[in-house]
Picture 1 (cartoon, rainbow, N blue to C red):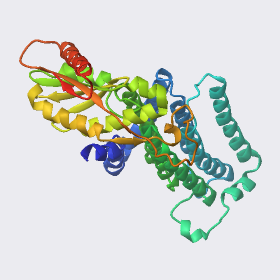
Picture 2: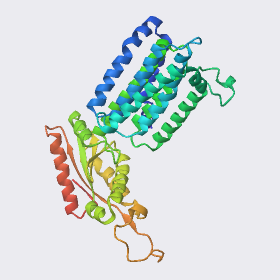
Picture 3: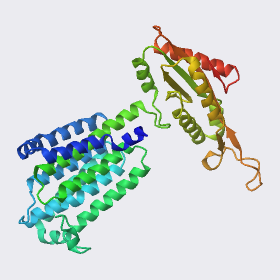
Picture 4: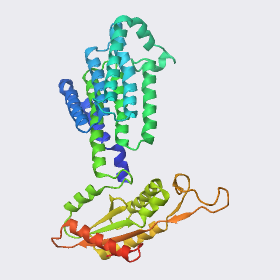
Length: 404
């Protein structure tokens, strides 16, 4: 439960709390001085990470945030601001959420590739368009951004026009839907928070240093999301959601004293894959991973590679782990699969559709080998190798069993 809760509040929660504390209690001179270097530091770190990890979306998002920040500082909003200034600020506020949503939903296409250069061109084209509107048709452009769809009395709390508010609302809705279906929630969640912070910065009557710091923090959330996503890719298996082999290796290096390692292998997995296809095989691996993720006895499960998994039991011996592993083996065996849809065999069955033939239910089994490490100098990889040999004995003994 605590892990799931932490996943919803980290890392954005502490960063947002720090932002609120800074805006609430920092003296204005301190905040102004911080606003001078903070956005530059975030931009530099983000551009380096974007280049180093090939995250073009981060680079483009930081680019549009930097342009918005520049507009806020170069054209301070005021009630008596000339029409060109008002057009620049309203157009910036209108385009920023739409660009962030488009960048988030788009794929990684590189920076200096044709697709990446096209994105840069699109951003620069928008800059030129805003400048042209502010210079050549400021009054008409301002009238467009002042268009009212609803009574103006409802929006006295912000200087932003209703078209701008609609752009923020539409972008937030699109990002929320995308987050719901995203396989990589950290960047998607960060983009949603970025749009929210951009709105808070732009809605103020007199943004000043507070708005600059808020927009820079929006960029910081994107930078942190890239770091988090890179960590996940390195240490977590994308198919099953379990920690990967690198996580197991580092965990073993940190352990000393007594611990046990169990190696788990899905029986006849290659034959299953050849018969029913890789989609069905992936479903099997996810099912086994779900059972392993719920293992009792203080065990922690890992995707070792292919159809092989590992379970680490810190502070336990083989004898203490055997009942837990037997329970795990039984739980997997008792799970049934019904093949239908994408899980049908690759070859058409002999019985025609509608023949009344019952759908086939499949039983998946696993073989498990276990070894432990007591108060000796045995290296962790030797313990894993011993568990692998025990796994081989389980398979030689007929599969669907636990061996030591």
